Structures are given as C-alpha cells and as structure tokens.
Length: 92
Image (cartoon, rainbow, N blue to C red; front, side, top):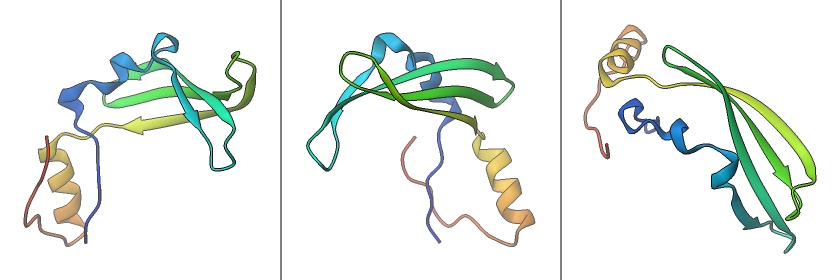
C-alpha cells in the first residue's frame, strides 16, 4: 500500500496565506485564483479555508478543511495498530 502524508517539520501552513495565492487554469481553460487562509493551529491540526475565485478575487467556492500533520513516530504507531508495517519512507 502506498499513500502520501504531510511532513509537519516543513510547517507548510505558514505560507498558506492570501499573499501566496495561486493562479491556475481549470480543465475548461478558465483562469482561477486559489487563496488559502489559516484559521487556527491547534497542536497538530491546522484549520484553513481554501477559496476558489475569479482572477479579480470574487469568490466562487469556499471550502473549509482540518488537516492533521502527524510526525513519523505517531504515523508509524497508527499504522502498526492497524496491522501495517513501514517498509520504506521517501521524501522529507
């Protein structure tokens, strides 16, 4: 089994700000702006809003998410409890 998780040591949420909005183009060729705003950091859980907007910033959709950033030891413990063993780890 393979899956991806986020490295809490990278502290990615620190750059999830409106100042770092991303301009993208959807599959239909429509330009969009993706804007992130972190609401809270509580232990290893980050609560954030992701706004998909027109290039001028007019919001089209706002999604709220809570992401948990597990360190390697905690993740390994959860996997072991579920009967899995880590064979290899790639990336940071």
